[in-house]
View 1 (cartoon, rainbow, N blue to C red):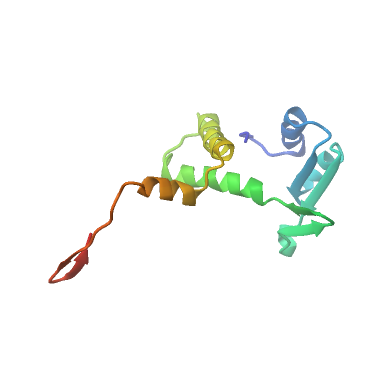
View 2: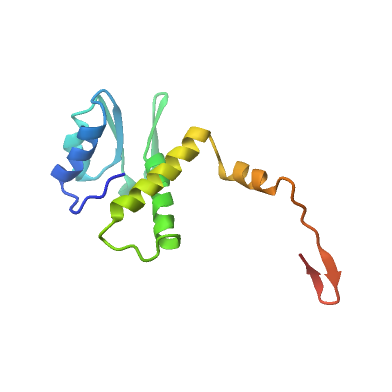
Length: 136
């Protein structure tokens, strides 16, 4: 992820062109920011969210932006939860942290369910009955 002060066609273009090889398939939403950029890559697939299109099968391939949206949602949740008072001076630090967390999960093939199961190992949840009901 990259922080852009102004999202124009030129500034948005610089990110994938500078960081992704040209023989890559680019999946985006239908924003006009991506129409020209898409021609610079081997393939460009776009979904039109305004028409309630979120995924489309194109032969064996499914065109979608779900992965990108999932990564961005992890970042958004950290901004609401962990970094509640993030100023404009250091957004690149928070973006780098979010990138690291997501990429580490992907590299280790970790899912939330696996984390919960590992965290419960060796622990026992017991309930005691009182006059008011049960409590842990």
